[in-house]
Length: 73
Image (cartoon, rainbow, N blue to C red):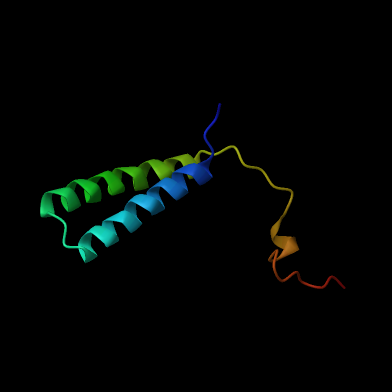
């Protein structure tokens, strides 16, 4: 089973939000340091997975933005 790029986005976001909560709760520096390093490694993995994802679309620059399509003349 292939893990989607969205999973890596959610995992990385969750780890970095957990880090912010740890800073707010004044957790030990060692835990925050290891979480920061782990989050940075996850960030690199996430970027790699997104860039190498086999995603294709039929949209082109002629279609403009999906949420605000340009009127075709």
